[in-house]
Length: 275
Image (cartoon, rainbow, N blue to C red):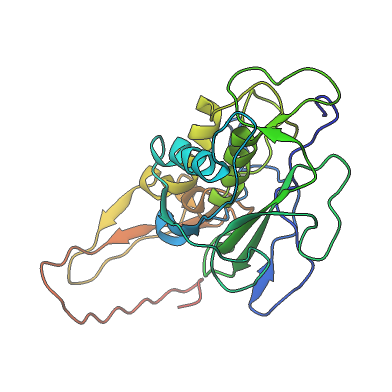
């Protein structure tokens, strides 16, 4: 779907494969969730990350690009469980350095922008024991050939209009968090830019599902001694606790509460599972 001929970025892009690290290649995902928002299950460990911001210049309306990007971060930070720690210094977003940053560029780190592409978020992933790969780096490049301004409400009309920078930044930061494109509901994460200028309830619900999935499954208290249990229908699945992916293996969760540091030895035996 397009709106006025302008598209948001791909969810992520990349072409290099590292072991055990890979650049995220997917454009769209089929969610394992029943809700409308789209998530693949890839997310940040701990639900937080640093982000380097140092944008130069200001919009025709007199608002600094830097300040508008910080406002876009706050649009997610203030309304979700995810936490951005802002560091106001310049970092090249095209460096694969484990640091997250943003800048205006005339190319996507060596490749051309696609037709009508406003910005691209590049994510790097690392494998995990359970579920989809974790995000460990996400950088945003913003097409410097696009005419931007900063304003609220409906997009300006006309083929030569200026695009609202803040809603582009909000959209790309949604990809940084782990959200994918949403085509079914009204959302800032729609694949094409439109009149929505802030995260919607659907967008916020996606972040909530991605970073609070573990709490939706029963966690059994584990006490010292012997515990016998079995996996069966009705148990949580790996896809449930990791909020995405296609691993529907059953899993039981156990919680150990410690009042002070201790060394524990756990042994599991099973006639049907790898111990």
